[in-house]
Length: 357
Image (cartoon, rainbow, N blue to C red; front, side, top):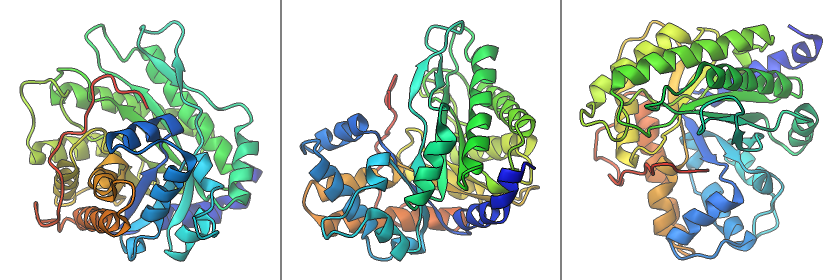
């Protein structure tokens, strides 16, 4: 372990454990300004800083949210933003016992030499210095999203797998040197018509490569979290899997690839409906596992979809009620105690083919 990481090792491990607390998960509110604009446009609200502030302020002041949510991933604007009452958004989260985090990548870029649709994630230049500034502003963890796609032309290519794994590892090492816990996110897109077995095989390759790169780069695994996709068939596959099959494939994939030293696993929802994201997670937490990591959630759309519509630009009470219902549902799912349909939710599929963030 490097001297710089050793300085923060105890804090990194404590933060990672807190984020992976039993029955709690992470609220992903790190949408970029253009992506947030798409969400607001869906409810007829203009994409202004004032409206983004109002929406996120509504989320962070939801009574009791800290009972179900351990951390919130923020976009840079939000980290430095104040609530309408003048108090910082960071302080609103701290008062709920919710740990603020920050999206640190700078978005996807075309990967030269790879397949035409393949990308790498940018933002490594100056990352440790930026991470120090985010730490000073109150952030205690970070997120970096790499994207891979299973395609009929042989994707993901070996080049894309290795490049994105290396980028995740370099990011993780860089932010740990500034005291931030890295969430490592190798997303396998749902686009395609491949069966679940194909997803599992590719996901095993990807996650193994990620941890090989992390070890090579001296990442302190006890101070990290993994944010993977669930192991599901392609969205256009005619043979869609039931929740039990998804859970079994997903847990098997993780047990074959994720070191036991990793503090916790917090799934992305990746276009699943609100209800499916809860049901799949619940099934996973009813399977006996060899490893002891906490298996929970780090959802964006699967926590916010109904909430955003209920809020509609002005109805704070309705928005907060919808958010707390989904937060409680996923908290129960993280303990294997969710009863499908017991909380208000949407069955609307949130997957969009070719969607860019």
